[in-house]
Image (cartoon, rainbow, N blue to C red; front, top):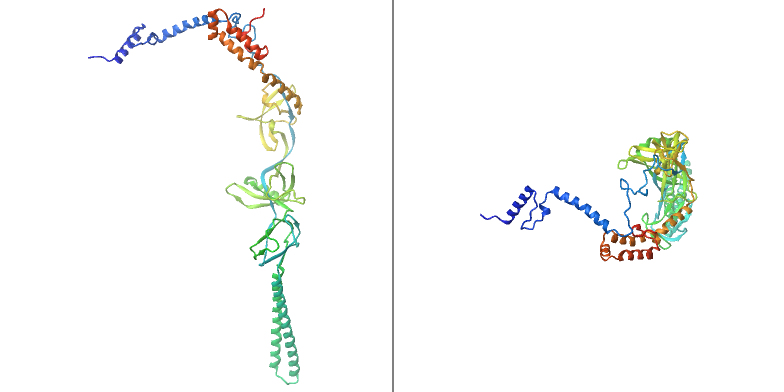
Length: 500
């Protein structure tokens, strides 16, 4: 039975591994593959000193190996600097004093300016506009004339009603005379009492008819009055939608809008958990509301005037409104504002800037600077935060707290107080000056040439050729090119020849 070549190969490898003797097979297996791992590692370890010797032999002339102390540090003391001293170097900071004072508590919410009323001016009769008495954006008062409509048909109806009244009044006068004559005749027994009662009925009927005519006249005067469109209140005229000659339909055509701007309201939402406090302030009537526009160039103070009766179940907030005087039209409908409602005041609270507080995984801390300018960590608890300030517990009034530069402090660090508004001009100039040499190509660019030369001298191909020919052309070229690029500065001291 014949054995295949893969089977023979496997048998040979097993035999070699068992005997521990390197054997070359006819399959081209190297002795290194058949050697045990320990033997291979030993040979590699023996090869490393040889490589080191070869590297020492290939080192360029004038480049003596620098002696090194134990641990790999250079013997001349130019190695890495020792570790920092406990507490670190002095740190430049600015500090503030913890203050004990009353801190007002405000609720912050975005708000929208809403007018007290916006009226859509519509014609109440179908007619044609004959004259426009206002302009767009004009401020008007209650009763000012805005439009005049064609009222000729209504005037004719009023005249007709008045003529009917005159006719019925004449009939009434005649009935009254007939009644008086009947009363005289009944006294002389010329007519019966029934004739008098009939005459009295005619007088009463004519009197009612006259009253009806007067009511008809009043009814005819109403559509006639609709021909004069007047302002229902104080406000500002919006866009004019109709002009002289435009036909308008009763209660359909929108002619313009009238918006009341003074006073004006700001609508906003408050969290449900503060509802009790807000309602208490609303009942007292002393709820102060402040608004600031996003550009922070406008700040006004008003009063809380309305809290909705329902809480929005989707957002958990309740709608509220505040009223502001707006005589100078500083607030405009639809504008966005930041609303602050003062709901409480913390008495004698310890107040520090929020920028002093450092948030860590274990909680909030601050760095307290003692009288010896030493920094110490102090855990604090934020009671309430308002804008850039926070009321905290865990500090005493008057303690010095690090603010700017606190991120550089460590427990036990020495703090150096610096001015709060340093001159930035000198600092920027220094930064630019420091960046100048880098851009000029000093050390950074000059390192390219010497690096290439150093690689060639440390065992590259150029060094091999130079050592074979006994000339060192690569080193001479590298030294000649580097001063041209850097102005005589080299980035790799290994390529520089020692000065005699």
